[in-house]
Length: 95
Image 1: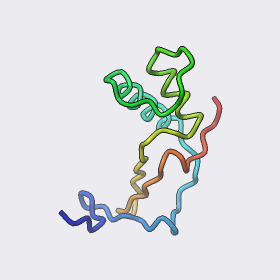
Image 2: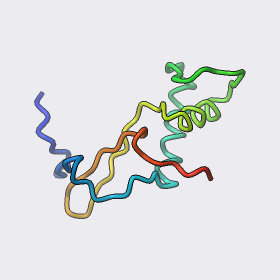
Image 3: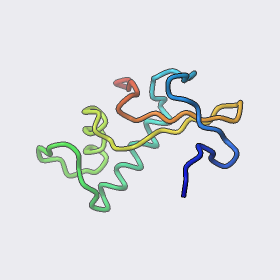
Image 4: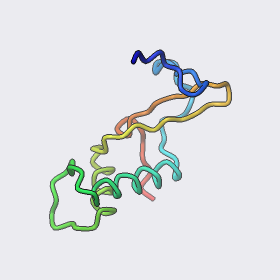
């Protein structure tokens, strides 16, 4: 299956012409942490060294701080396009 960049009527935006800011929103952060914690709880490989952590949410938070979460955030834009950002590219506030 060839990927022509089309996703349910949306067109992929060229990464060099991104229009959104490189900051992870609190909503993206919550969704990423929740999704990653669920994956970890279902025995997905952990991307950081554990130092006694057993709570999947704490492990996901540690991965986020270390820029090791293997996920992509897709931001849909009003003009019918979308931008893909790797979690490693986004700046995360420490709140």
